[in-house]
Image (cartoon, rainbow, N blue to C red; front, side, top):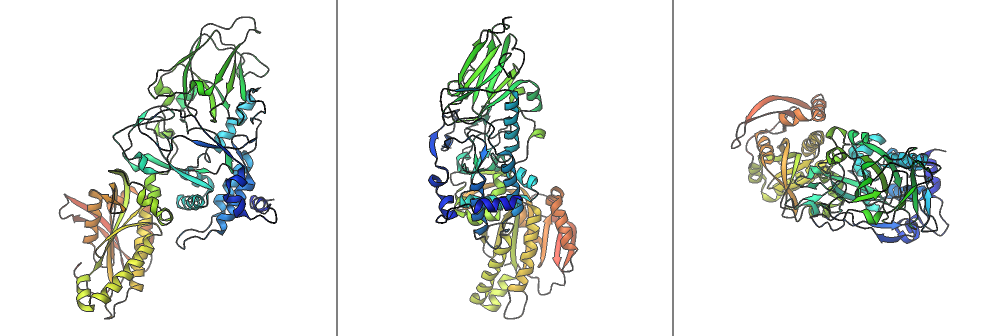
Length: 600
């Protein structure tokens, strides 16, 4: 039976009087949850409203397990959900990949809750390795990093984002914004509202490594998605840090302790027991013992070498809530034990995954710093802001994203400006009402074309400003706009209706103004100047964009290779009020006729 067949079978496994909507959208019916707030691991100097995680607890369910029947019901709803004509259709390949991941790796491994809340269940290296392997395999889904999952599923990032945004609308996933920590590369924290990160005057301390981060750019903030707990059940407070290769080399022991709903715990042994994690006891000395997911940071001080009598074992009981770091600048506490033959009896009483991570006493720099080269790519908040499905279906959120921000920077945004050629003459010749009708039709055509790959920012008179995440998307949209305007916008006097287009990319400042997220800076000025230098039926593109974006170059070459278009050779523009010159090239519609006079 294929993955799709199994999923369809799961979806149809409902009682005769029960619709999938009834099961899908009612949490009480679907998962019979109870809620319990977790202990906040650190206090940030910035108040983050949803920093405290409110876990859904499912009785008798083991953390990091999946429910394929629940996923199937959601996917049936996904397939039935009406999509905008400009959005890509339901992508079976994407969801089949996620289904197969959960089917293979979402099964229980014996780390479930014991009925006795005081029970401590012994675990060994095989148990630890099995759970760690499952955790690492499921990491792309907990949370979902769109850039990583798109590559793994063999789809484009745009398709992955479209699927996840629609999944967010029906409740299959929830969307969060999570700044990347400058030091450890993990998520500083997570919020459903981007405006929480707008006050750049105060640092936000990473929940994993406690480093103070100043958020000034949208590109510093990743967007992630969490599967509904009924589909993938996870209990953890935060994202944690990703240890570097150097940090891993300093590791002596890593043992997972999943949270349980009853409070029962697990035992890991060193130098003793039936299945010790490490055969030999720890030697005398100071070690670091921490968990960067649950927010614990301690020294483990072993006062002496283990005695010769192997029956002499020290039991170290640990309630995770007792060792959590409450303040980011608190002094690191020490846990002293008489010797290194140990039973670690751990009670996960915070409803968070805990890792018993013991390292040599190395520096914070070694423990926490993750080089850029070792970091996974992520999808930035600026990328989601310019995704057409987000702009369409979350328009309130798009307008609200930065409502309390003074400004946030984007390292690179692709801006497109268009304007009508000869509009003053058209109004004089046709009269205001007929000319206005044509202009309104031209807006409809441009909005339709631009919304397939990006978003319309605003109109200024007859001009349109649009923003895109990629140069290739901007060029594709401009090409469609130029062709469709010629087809759809007809003048009664038989003269052609023409536009011109300019495209440029670079950094900009995003500012909420008049109900929109507008852009300011030299990139905006340059894009407008490039547009004004174009003639009718021409699209000029800055060399700066093309030099930095190979896909944009390929898209331009593809368009020039078609019969309808001719290449515009590279030339230098005097930017008229902007210092210096700028190289541009582009394309134009072949055999363009009509006058090319005026732009007002």
